[in-house]
Length: 287
Image 1 (cartoon, rainbow, N blue to C red):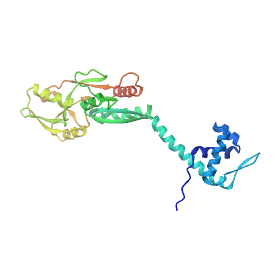
Image 2 (cartoon, rainbow, N blue to C red):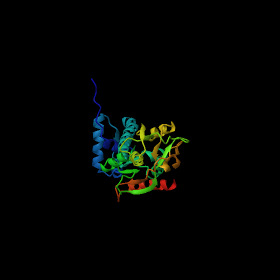
Image 3 (cartoon, rainbow, N blue to C red):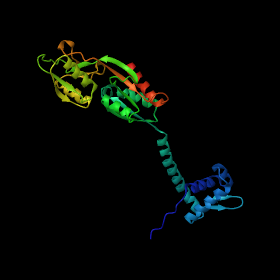
Image 4 (cartoon, rainbow, N blue to C red):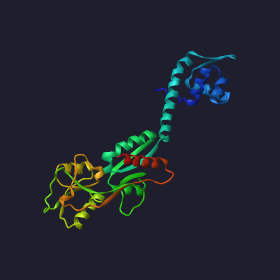
């Protein structure tokens, strides 16, 4: 038959350890901030649960019995594990969380500097990072799923802090030559991409035929297709992917118009969110 393990309360073990250390019930009670009667009760319950005398008491002294000496290290281990477990979850509860959404364009080239700088300032903040298309980031922000976003500004939306404004550029493989009489081979993000919309509108307004040669939801896919010489893409010249080049105006491709990058957060009083936006803007200023 299995003998049940006694249910030992941490408060009993703490009282036992303190009495053993002080060799005094009254001193142990003062150290623990308890009544002496409470400490005595803890020791009685502990000894009853174990079925052993742990302390030898006289009118003038308190000392460990042989069983008490054997229990001392084990009691320390139990209390240490108890405190470690509680402390772990207290620290987790004290950590803060920031849900951060960032444009695919910016993430590949500049995000690591932002994360490094912010992490050094706020080591107790856990970032939940979402990298995606600007429209999806706006949707996540508006629905409360993201706390801060950095994205191409949505047309007609003036919220947030403007990071920079620029004319989009056509990009492609260095030395790529386009046949002016053939449809423009277009590489683009899937709808509702801001750059895709601007590219298609520009080509349509210029009455240029075009055909979609590659669609990719990631910048790495856009870059790979462009490096392969499959076609051209509309992109921020400031965030030009490695290995690609801006297609010169002499190619005959129509101008794409301007785009803005902006950071949006929850507003005043949100210290961590504002600090993240400040870190973003500082990184852009150094870029």
